[in-house]
Every structure is written in C-alpha cells, then in structure tokens.
Length: 450
Image 1: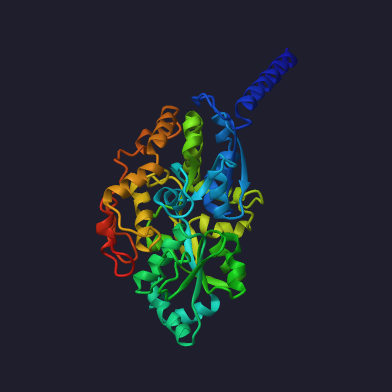
Image 2: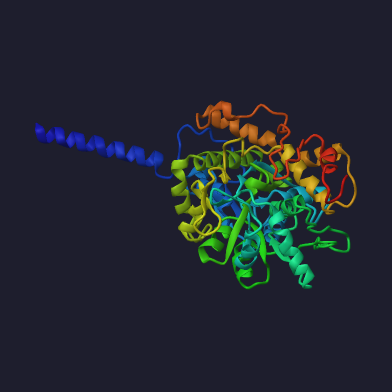
C-alpha cells in the first residue's frame, strides 16, 4: 500500500511538472490576451548601448513570445544604418534616437514616415573628457566638504577652450549623430555657459559655423578609442561608453544628462507608418511586450540580472562590471568618485514609456535653435509635426490590455493630453512648456530665437 501511494505521488508530481513546464518554459503566460498577429516573424535593430535593454529583456524573458511574436535582434553598426534599414523595410523596427523619426518628419536629413508608440527610457547619457582636459578643468570646479560640487558647469571648461583657441588649436568633441539627444545635450551644456557649439547652415551641415567647440559624429562603441587616440578631447554618449573610459582610465565623466535635464527622454522604438497600417495588432503586441520589459527593468532587484543579459555579446557585449557601474543605482565620475544616482537609467517609472508630444516638441525646438530647421515655424507646426511621429494611442491600447491582464496597474496609465507640465529641471533653470515652443526658444542667449 505504501508503495502504491508513492507511485501515485510520483505520478502526480510528474504530471504537475509537465503542466508547469508546458505553461512556463518559454515564458508563456495563460492570462495574455493574444491579438490576431499579422506578422509574427520580426527583425529589430539596435545599437550596443545599455538603453536597448527593453528589447533584450522582452526577448530573454519571453514577453515577445507571450504575444505570439518571434523576434530576432540584430546589432547595427551606426545610427544612420538603423535609420536607413527601418525606412527601407529591411528591419521591422528598431531602437532609435528620438530625434531620428522627428527629423524625418520635420524636414532635416532623410525624409521618411516613421512613428513611435514607445519611449524606451529616460536619462542614460553623460559627457566625458580626456584625462588631460580633466586635469585642467578640475581646478576650476568648486569643492565642498572635500568633494567636487556637482553638477559641473561648462564654465569649468571655458578657460580650457580659450587656452586651446589662443594656441591656434580647435577644441574638438564628439556626439553620436546630428539629431541625437547627445548632440542637443552637449550643445545645451556648453551654451548654458556661454560657449557657442556652432550653427548648422545649408553650406555647413557639420554644425560648426561660429563654433567655439567643433562637434563631430563618432559611433558610440568607438568613443573611448577615439578619445584615447587624441582625435577628440571629449564626447557625449550613452552607457556603457562613459564608464568604459573610467574603467580604462583614459577619461572622466563630468556631467550626466540627468543633471543637464532631469528625466529627459532618450531613445524610442520606431516602425514605419506603413508597417503599422499593415500590422496594427502586431504593433500593439510589440508595445505590450516592451512595456512589460520596462516595468521589469525598473525593479531594483532585477538590475543585476539585466546587467548579466546585457553583457552578452549578442547585446551590449561590454564587461558586466562596466555596465553595472551605471545600471545599478550608482555612477562613477572620477576614478573612485562613485555617487548615488538611482535614476540614471529609468525604463518605466515617471511614465517613461509613454510617448509624450511635449518630448517630440523639445527635440524640434533644438533643431530650430541650432539651425537644422532653417526657418521659423509656428507653434501649431511643432505640435502637428510631433503628432505625425508620436503615437500615444497605440501605447494606450497596449497598456489597457496589460492592465486587464493584471500585468500593470491601471493607475500606471497616465491621464494626459500628451503634454507634460512645464518644467525647469535644466542645468540653467530655463522653463520649458511644450505648448509654447517659440516662447521657449526666445529665452536662450545662444542660438536661433524663433
């Protein structure tokens, strides 16, 4: 009798194991309300940066498969390649600079009908200078209680730039792409200290007219090597390429974009309007998976696991120690000066995944400020252009389904007209109201006024 009971128990456990395995092995979730997917086989592109994390997590944890999607992730060489391959249909979607689809709609660079239903993250960038430049800058930075005072203003760099100019040497820095957040952030930081980062014109597409600092494009993974070679003296880039400079002891991050503009929008996930028109349910399903990934990423206990995934060669491929330096709640500036910065990478909280029109309008104001948009535009033009690109209606459909499935709280769906409240959380304290772009532009001393 005892043996019979044991056999029954083993059979029960074995049956339970099979059931659990069939439900959970691939990450499948029985509560997922699957849509009628028009295109289940998908290929997405990304650049090797930590903010591609939602894509990696959605794949690794089976969130794409939960939605009936079978996704291949392909690393791309540079941002232009990503823009071209999505525009041409070689990629179904991609991790992209927020400025790329906006510029495509706003008349700067390649024109294409690109849209985003999902903001991938907030913050995540920094400005790094070489050790030699840091040695000159450091003596211009105030000290309090034995530590350098942050945020570090570009005022500390100003005399260094003047020294180079007096010696007949141009001061060279890099960013990742002409319409990248990095370009606008380094320009903002410099201009806040009265340093002219240069203007774009029809004859100078490098944006170097009247520049005190010559900015040029370098792909993110190549930044540390270019700095080490002495080709540039500093750069603005996303992680892990600032921490890589610390790790290799070739440079020092001096300011994060969180300090330049607190909780600024960063990358977006982009598809063509044609893809969304032909595959509306697929677009919603993609957005659902990415929202879940963002939520998972913003649980602090999950960050070490995320670092492990991202360090794989298929994703970022950098040393896990380097990635962890910014992904786990701290950020290292000068070697040994590690400071608490829990919001350096934000993937979900503060409505990070929602595509706000006001975010798109800000990028357009910077394109106008620096001459990429050559003529003044009305406030209405800014709003209309933002609405061509940012598609919160897709995000809302996805989020409501997730709330019905119990995967996110309904309270995480913002009640909004698409515009954030006016903010002054910039390094220079200038207030930004997305509904008044021309009024905002008029506040700056450097750059176009309207």
